[in-house]
Image (cartoon, rainbow, N blue to C red; front, side):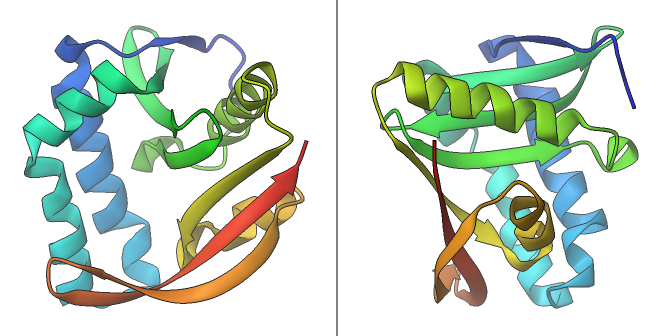
Length: 157
């Protein structure tokens, strides 16, 4: 368990580390649950820098830092929708994701919402289940021409 994590709002200067975590985590962690062609298509989302710049500008977007290295990130859309939560592939299962999730849940409450919602991958299902999220529905999602099995999960706060 990591004790000395720092959390702060993301800046545009963080983009190289954020997109690297996104790409590398998908390739290393999510490859257990998705095909090689799905992983390749999904990880290409890291290359859309304009979209990442807009996310940092528009959303509540946090990074987790350890010794000045970004080891995770998460952001909320519309004040209650957890759009992404990613932890560096070399820092999995060290409470970083849980701490980011708690902060996001608190922010959702401070935004005046009673429920947090997210669209998650198969790989994230156990993590969200262990944090008492309920599966609202299983769905197929298309991204860059590939179909993915994903889940919409919710939690009453």
